[in-house]
Amino acid sequence: MGVLYPGAFYYLLALIPALALAYLVRERPRRVIVSSVLAFRALRARRGRRFGGWPQPDWMFFVEMLILSLAVLAMAEPYVLRSGNPIAVVLDDSAAMQALAAGGRTRFDAARAALKDALGREGPGEVSLYLTAPQPHRAGPPFGSAAEAAAALARLRPTGAPSDPAALAALLSELASDTRLRRVIYAGAQPLAPPVPPRIEAFAVGDPLPNYAIGSFVLRREALGHSALHARLTVANFSPAAQTLKLAITGDGKPVGHAQAHLAPGQIGVVEFPNLAPAGVYRAELTPSDGFALDNVAYATAGAVKSISILFVTPAPADAAGLATLPGISVRVASPTSFSPTDLASADLAIFEYAVPKEMPPVNTLLVMPPPGDPLFGFNIQPAARVEITGWPPTGPLTDSVNFRLLNLRAGEYLGQHPWLRAIVTGSGGALILAGKRAGHRFVALGFNPFPYLGRQNLPMSVLTLNSLSYLAGFGAETAGYHTGDPWIVPAGVTGIVPPGGRQIKVTPGMLFTGANFPGLYQLISSDGAKSLRAANLANLRASDLENTPALKIETSGSGAVAEVAPRRAPLTNDFILAIVALVILEALVAYRRRRRSVATV
Picture 1 (spheres, rainbow, N blue to C red):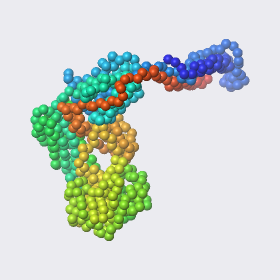
Picture 2 (cartoon, rainbow, N blue to C red):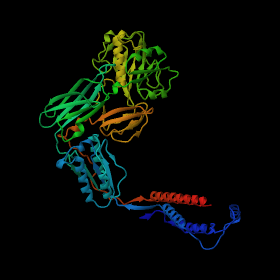
Picture 3 (cartoon, one colour):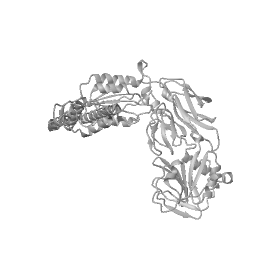
Picture 4 (cartoon, rainbow, N blue to C red):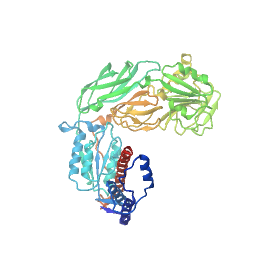
């Protein structure tokens, strides 16, 4: 241990005598007999301070002397020397580490035991601990010794998120090329491809293991207003033998469907449930069981059943009237002059008719015939007295089941090429439907007006309108839902999220939530107390293929020689400041209690 500024100790020679002098001039208590309180107060008022005599220090004198000594020591900026050339420990904490290894324990337990044994052979020095899931990251500041790092390993648990093999290989390559590191110790499911850099000691715990897995679990509503849901699940047989896999689905705890699929070795199949009874939460379970239970269960929530809140910004309020007849949709109308960005806080999606917002909306948005000269989106607009459709994709979320030959679009505008919106439907003068994503939100721009919604009176246009709203609201989207490890945007109005078996996390609408690292149900709590559920599953068949685990290729730069690093100074000033604060608080509490006791006695 040393100090940077030893001259600070001269202050101690002046402060300690000053403290003793303060105790000499302090009024010392004397016993006085008075006939009344009034006389006592008068006598006390005439009494002055006395100087001289022997000091009578109590315990507070020594506490204050200790505080002054610690303050001077903090001014001297003490430090301890940490030996150079630290080591790095990389532990795979991905979902695949929950699979069973030899001896009946999990891969994670085997990897952790291997790292503890390796750390036990290390001498003094700093240890930096890295974890791999969902992205490689360092687990806090470096540890002062291998024993501290080993104790921290005992408190770790694997996540339910897959790791990124490319990012992990990049981390190991970077550590292996760092000449300041004496050694790199890695333990994980993926082995390292030869040649392994000499500075890396690797423990591969990912022995081949037969596994049956659920991939995606998708719920969609076949049509707006239809109560039954359609479920689509992918299942995989990662084993050396053909297997009949059975799926059972429960809705709110009640059986609602079962099916089976016969799959060859390594085959991935699809199981459809076209008519699931309405429920809030669906749970799918795959049998037979195997050594990796995490991907044998998947959850889905009937989010499509909930009401969709639409903010319709238009100078023609009558155009929004038809949407209110659709079940599961609530519409709020605002004029372009009264619209404020804060109005979007309680909306699931927005529709701007003949108008555009002044800043990027934080929700999925439909732009109907946007005006020219807009600086935010920068549309290249060509008005037309009559627009005609010449090209459209036969399949897609926006054009599915739309008979474009029967559409009568009348007047509109052609939308030119856009930097980030791609053309979906085109006409003779340019695009008529553009779609794309920005900042995690979906945007659709129309060069014609599909409103008001007329239902069966204009069936082709109604189908196109429902497709657009379904695409923006997530209806019928063929996606794999939410995956563990993937961030997602907090919905409008949500102020708290409760992970599976965890405590509530405070969030802000529109922020990126990165805490979905375990499979299960996440409870979303709105500012008005309303609660909803969102499911996150592993849904990563690459991570579920425990029979074929690819090796990581490590690329190193430099000669591989370790550069001698001088011992590093670890400051202790903050520790002394915390001790001073604790002593001051303790002294204040005791002095306050004494003062209250003396007042009560008088």
